[in-house]
Image 1 (spheres, rainbow, N blue to C red):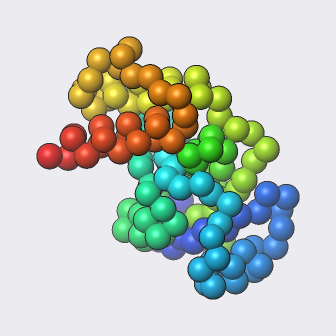
Image 2: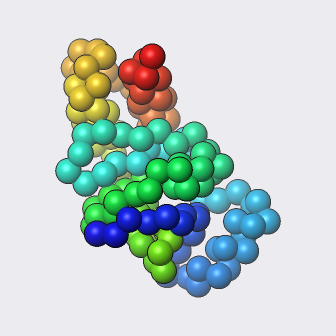
Length: 144
């Protein structure tokens, strides 16, 4: 495990060259991630809400991250990305896996228990985006 102090968005669904992805990011072309998204750390019930690509870059630069093997980002469409280290940078590696709504619901309910804001059994949603928005509200209320 290494503390990272640099971060950028790099998408390599089939291990495509990161240089191409870096050029896309610099030009501001939208990425494959459907924002907002959640960062889920292995073995931790805390979920981190990331509003958009700019918020992701800011988050990575402001909060040095400890990366473990199963840390992941789940976007508003349910697409799963693994957080991996590549040359001291945090890379989002796309997978062919989509989180089921029921799987994300379990993560959100665990997060709700962690922040002690609501009865987690009452949380429900029809889309991944709705569940991510619930996390945003839970985190916003908790910070007050």
